Length: 195
Image (cartoon, rainbow, N blue to C red; front, side, top):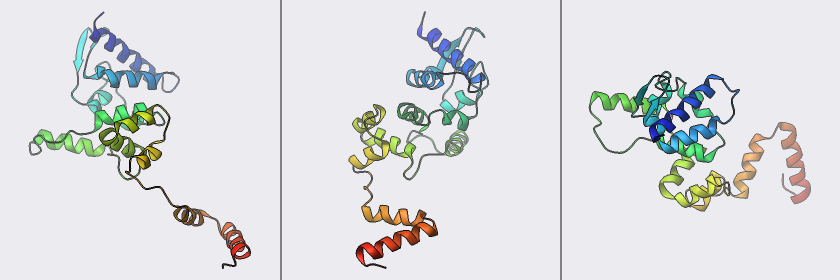
């Protein structure tokens, strides 16, 4: 059995499990296998007796079966949450590559699609995984292995500052109800003579 047949079987199994709409287990593991092996780029489907090829992960996800998964991109992305290795593999496929022709009609169409994918920004988990992949792969591996959270890895890598007790305290006060604030300020006054 060649690689294309194995990859096609994994993809067909994934298509079948997706069709069961949440009743199937092992979706995350199958998706990770497909992403890591890059099976989605070219695979043989026995049911159609055809080989299908895709240039972009998004095209594979949204193309109807048997040539693709026929799934909403955002819905499938939700399956990656909480699995750092899968989130990282997903992001590695959707992240645009620098350079190339940015003026042709085809390039503009692709760029619009990439924008619609919601690039990770700010302090999001996705953004953290992308920064770690690009700048600190050893810390990314510790996140994937479950040793560190993405936030803690970003702090260790010097990409994010750790919040001081003062900052944490002000955030906590902002989230307090009026009753909790009254109790807190009463405690400050009795404990420190403040207020």
